[in-house]
Amino acid sequence: MASVIATVPALPAADAGMIVVDDETLSAALLVDPRRLADGEFARAPVVFALARDCVVIVGADDDAAIARVLTLADELFEAGGPLVSGHPIVLTEGAWAPFPWRERLPELELRFERMLRLFSVRAYEAQSAMLQRPDVHIADAKIRVLDSGVTTTFATWPKGTATLLPVVDNVIIADPAGTLSVATFAQFLDAGGDAIVRTGLSPLRYFVPGDRP
Image 1 (cartoon, rainbow, N blue to C red):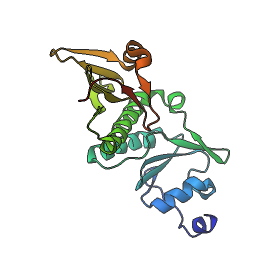
Image 2 (spheres, rainbow, N blue to C red):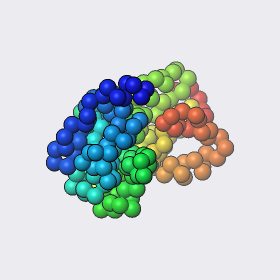
Image 3 (cartoon, helix red, strand yellow):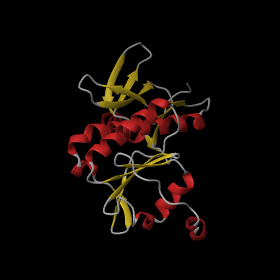
Image 4 (cartoon, rainbow, N blue to C red):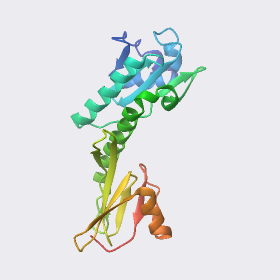
């Protein structure tokens, strides 16, 4: 691995406070060996957003405007429909990668960060759903809903009484065969189901809700 990393070219130059890496090998080398940033423009506290395999973005931890542009880019990537990697940024601290504490550092961007995390979770569940299809269980889809307040939330629908693999979302819509709908937060739904609802080992996480075949 060390010999391969040594042959990888240098990072591209920053543009408007951002370095965008579209080469997967270069991105991997950066993450494996953060010393490659030692002489870079963000040596003090570079933050990395691994949005997609061909879109890894580096910005300075103190550049609020650049971070806001990354969040806009994350929205655009989601709308483009391609595969995504992670909505969780990391920061170089004392020579090692650590989670970037955006809640403490950028409270004014909290809603936009929360939106990005939900968009990325929905895309991850979409990819997972395609692999889980089977005739004896309903694979519930995670979906996005933007409230009138501008807050982005996620929801999934449970056909009441149906065996279901349910994604972790903000709200569960319960569709009764009688034709009525009700809504519960995910925590309320788990509490109501008790021990009958089983946490699976799937990643991203899903819960199995027992019931009849779809």
